[in-house]
Length: 69
Image (cartoon, rainbow, N blue to C red; front, side, top):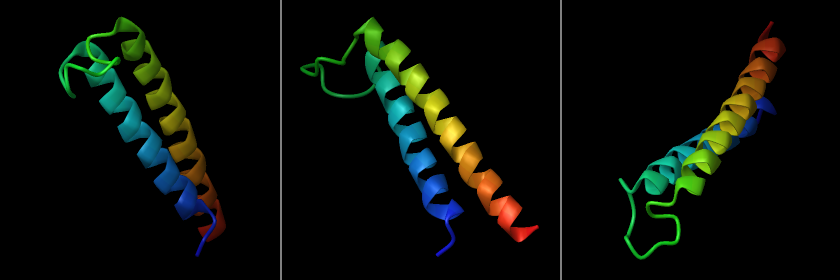
């Protein structure tokens, strides 16, 4: 297995988690009994997690592309 692919998968998982947390903070996803539901702090946390996922995803893609070239 190439080293870049697990990093890409990790980046995608973190990215999707950040999107879910962002929407849960807005009150669009999840149970109303959750402490994240309609909590403005989780909107910001979700955005930061999404950016982190994008960075990790980009690193994984960079590693994969550089190994092929």
